Image 1 (tube, rainbow, N blue to C red):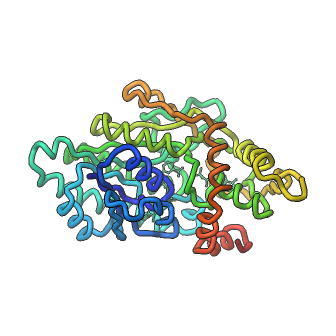
Image 2 (image 1 turned 135 degrees about the vertical axis):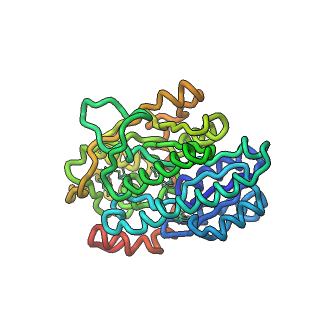
Length: 354
Ligand code: NAD
Ligand code: TYD
């Protein structure tokens, strides 16, 4: 079996659902259930013995030691993190606690466990750390996309905390020989995405008749990847990646934010038109920019394609249509998310109530 941390979150939940749809290897899901952890995303696994949920913190040494000793997973996939840049600007401490200190404790538990394994199990063991392109900082308009050797230049408390965790993971390989793999992926979108991030926020606000808040001039560029393509990349790296290596994962889909928002609006015009027949794009409102806002991210995914044969299955056009459709069909999931802590957060960030 494998141990997956943070699998009640957006990408982790998609990863576990895809994993169990493709194979019968069981998953232990260790998740603290912060505001971003939502077991409803895994509702379809209720009663499925292949999914064991454990409520807890990656930084809890006693708990993680016990889980590793009891279940002897052949791999640990670490998704657990605080992940929202705007939250990291309002309050960086949780980011340091989970992303840096939590990852450190997890590595310590894994190192002790790995060290005690018999040789055959030891050589097959993997620790896969899921990270982000944001650790590389920001690009100018004509710069080449980030390769794995791009210098680390994180600009937000979120990206700085992820960069610190990447460095710890690297050091545990270099110093102790721990068989680690690191993936640095671009912006994901798709089902079960918490509606504080750009794409799901725009969908739910549009449908609720609320303003669509675009930061600054809306010309910041992100490189978008459908979440299930990220999951297939992680599976492939786990299967064939070389210990100690990092792999950049991206969809070759650079788009300015305003184009993303307009695309979402156009899809909603088609799939769920406004009652007054006006266009959803009329709800777009330019708001104050994010402090220190990175202008452009772009991933060069050549290495993972060349060495491991991975490439995304979805284009942006197919992925965004599936995503909008998913939100239209899963209003109960959205309503449940919105009734929780989400309300307080929206108020703090935008000065309104959800
Ligand atoms: P998310 O915020 O949706 O989910 C994070 C999950 O981790 C939640 O279920 C939360 O409860 C859990 N968690 C938080 N602190 C924990 C702790 N101390 N112990 C155990 N569980 C804890 O995040 P996501 O978007 O699914 O991102 C998952 C990972 O992928 C993160 O490491 C993130 O940095 C990385 N990543 C995300 C993106 C993206 O576009 N969302 C892109 C690249 C990389
Ligand atoms: P986000 O989804 O928060 O991801 P990240 O900051 O990790 O890239 O934001 C994506 C882009 O969209 C980013 O440039 C900020 C912008 N944005 C808005 O313009 N308005 C919003 O309400 C949000 C949440 C993000």
